[in-house]
Length: 305
Image 1 (tube, rainbow, N blue to C red):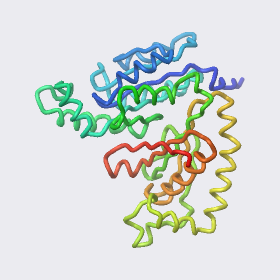
Image 2: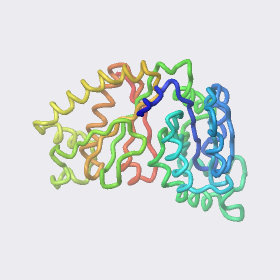
Image 3: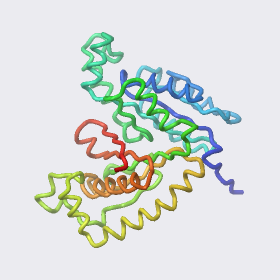
């Protein structure tokens, strides 16, 4: 007998929060607790799945973990996430709280704390060691929060934007670009393939540019298939996003992919994010491969003009 999965609104929300030391993970956990989540910090990974044995409680759950937690490893955390995500009773999301290296150094300088991964070395050594350790989780994250320019109050507001029950009707849409060579984003609810569009990589003057450059966007937009593809994609989103919102979904991730993740998927994602923001949706945008090239996570809100 086939059992229909529970609707999203009937499942228990589970937010697993991680990120580098000093980025704001603890503040995020406290903000979730203020929003009604049961908060458990520094829980060993080997104990996480035991929390869900038996009947599922109705109260949402926030779990904090990072390299200081006993038995922590990125591979172990991904394995736990995969198993929990397969449980139809749960809405599981990995929240990655990040921060630029310069800002982390400033925070450690201001507090005069030693870095937990380099207690006898400089904070920079610990920061870089932790960034290398956590790198596999960046692409796995469902929600990325960059606190580089945030105060603790700003961070609490951002957490509320994603998780507040009172604002659950305000579906948050994340639009991402990526390279198929590096795999599809695990967090994507919908993936659209842009590899059929004309490729700026083969235009020598455009190859060093990215989809953020107008010349690349114009080049891709001149493909005769671009407008029909883009218009139909927007029509589909216009149909589906209100349905996801009515079903109780708090966030939706739309991913556009191409071969290298630098040209076609980037300009299409930018155009889609702009149109969705113009239609009144709360939209943020992320370009995974451009992040990899720059070494920093860039998650920008798209503001309605």
